[in-house]
Amino acid sequence: MSRPLKRPTWSTVLLVLGLVAILGQSFRAGRAVWKNRAARDFATYHYAAQVAAADGSPYDTKALNRAARAEGTRRSVHPFFYPPPFLGLMAWDQGLSLATAYRLWFGANFIALLGTLWALRRWLHTPWWILVAVAASLTPIYNALIMGQANQLVLWPAVVGLATHRGVWVAVAAMWKMSPALYLAGWVARRQWRPTIEAMLAAVLLSVLALAWVPLDVQKHFYLDIMPGFSSGEYHGLRVPISLPANHSVPDLFHQLWPGPDNHHLDGRAALASKAVSLALLGAITFFGRHVQKHDVLGQANLAGALTVVMVVTPVYAYEHHLAWLVLPGAAAAHALWTGRLRGRWWWTVTLGSWLLASMQLSWLRALREVAPPVLAWCVQESKFIGLMGLLVVCCAAAATPAPSTEPSATE
Image 1 (cartoon, rainbow, N blue to C red):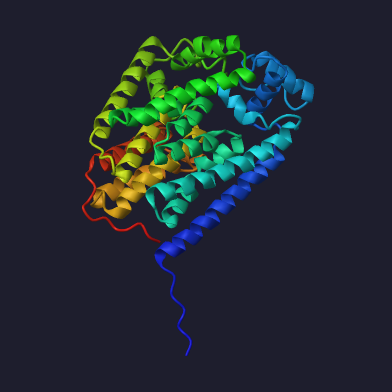
Image 2 (image 1 turned 135 degrees about the horizontal axis):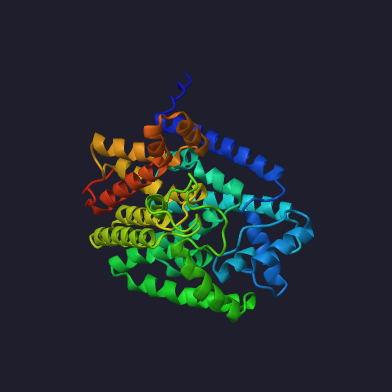
């Protein structure tokens, strides 16, 4: 007599639905990449690499524009303001057309997304259905893929470094995109000096290696002239306005309260208030981090998740593609709920509500803002920021809560 077929569990159903959603959104993003020959934000990386290979300065925006016009792809590109070692990540992009490089970059970022999920699985033993649900519902991931941003390629080594306590991987992420250096605060709070020192030494070594493609005077120009302007909104001549409705940052809120001299620079009061809030958030997270035990893996992951949210909201610009970093705090918070680390309907409500707000499709948010009454339009506009703050609270609470003596095993 044959055995009756086993009915699928709800976790299996979620896993299948999540995989379908990931494939569907990735296919849609891939079609958008294939059709767009101007390569959106990726064009900046492409032409910075071309100019640097020709012994020019990748921070010379006029040179990048000339390279784009010479190739006949677009009249101008955004300024390049990434650390010099980032160009090592672009070493493969030589002799390729902009469209071809853009498509390969899309594939690399998708692989990096899978690598990040695998690293989280190895680190936390989170069930695949949770990780898939996080990746499927976090729509900014697919916005970042379409924009040609580097966020998934930077997040992957950062998660590997956090999971293995290897500072060299966090240094790689930080020297590709400065903000992951904030993860060192979690190690410092717990007095983990070895990975901290390793990260600092690796950062110096990566900068030395970058001399092969970016001369010392150009590197000094970045660190002494370009990078200090980030806190004021001066992103090396970036023409995107601070007050763009899709900006989800703390400085943008203060810019709305105290408008700057133009839409690309913060007022002094807004800049000072932004720095104060950033330091307060970092100080609070560091306080919670001191109490995370050495073997409390989930507490460490939620601490890193809280730092990730701060990393996203404290720069002047926090656009939709930056929210792709929420893979880490989303997985850590979901795991805390699943294991009972956070108990009660309150935490389920706050976590799910915050996640829905932060991960909402940007086009839906714009549509809601258009139909909302004037008194609520601003709240709708800032709903993603509200969701980010809710997720920050959840991650801090999970990090501060002692691990239960008996937690459910992380099985499928």
